[in-house]
Amino acid sequence: MRRDPTEPEKRLWRNLSNSQLSGFKFRRQAVIGAHIADFLCPAKALIVEVDGDTHDPDRDNRRDTVLAAQRYRTIRFTNAEVMQNVEGVLLTILRALMTTADRWAGRPHPNPSPEGEGLDPSSISR
Image (tube, rainbow, N blue to C red; front, side, top):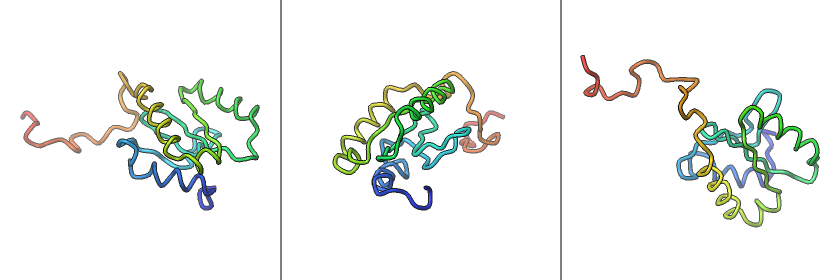
């Protein structure tokens, strides 16, 4: 799927890549355990799925339940929604991002920068 995304996935990715949606970073085809998310905002643990005609709602619900137990939130859109109203889809995603707590709030980031990296040298007390 990563090498051959659907047209709706391409269209949405053009709007999510390079932190274009209010600075939120997304990954495409992100592996989460045994699952692959169409799009993932790691900072918010928000999964965005674009569902075609072949999606099984019962299977999707089971998967969403498993991911929710791991503190991921999933929002879904149909191919038609993305193709006919990408602006509305983006607005819905942005609202979800703005109302979702930061994934690492109150906890250290699981992959911190090496010590001192990114710091302003003048701010380091010696």
